[in-house]
Length: 258
Image 1: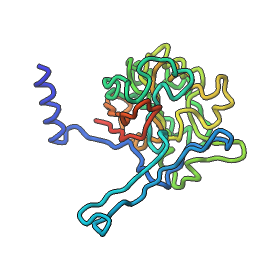
Image 2: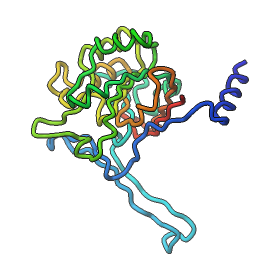
Image 3: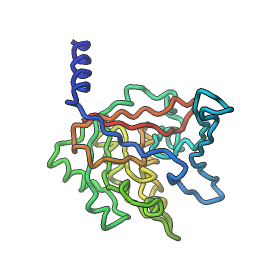
Image 4: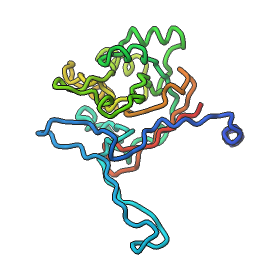
């Protein structure tokens, strides 16, 4: 029966009855990185250097060297990324359970609120209102916060920073705890540079999505796009980070099956 189910799924995919949606930003040197105060060390951007391109350096092949921080572009956060998750078993990208790399998604549309308030915070009230329409969030699901932030036309608008820091939407403290303790989610994903709001360094605790999610052995996805092409429920997410030894995270290609 299982073999037949896989066969039917593959046929549906081949026939176009299952749509693949790419939720990944193009990784390039222009894509903005997380900005930390200078005393905390730089977050290295993506750098690509051409090795050869059908020339005297390599007559029949084209390839590049590249380097970047683990948390660059569309990327995955493993539990070990935050101090609260440092002692959890299987907390790195090379040890986390592969079964967690494929999971269903709940997409909560906050695009209207975020369009008028860049510091918009997702709350428990918003989630309960969403559940009243779509049903309760299933355990081990991704919760993806749609804000349409990925549609911003320039990287300056995407960062949306001033002298007080970044101003980007994200979850408040209570809703992060609610999603973990009351809904047993797999992780939280956003279209912004981080899973936390831009001003979350002022919260108690600071950066609650990182603090509580990774402390519970759960995951984060950042810099997603095309969330407007997903249904509120019913999409299946493939999010497999690179198998980096002791990796705290990695850039990755995130795909949704609809």
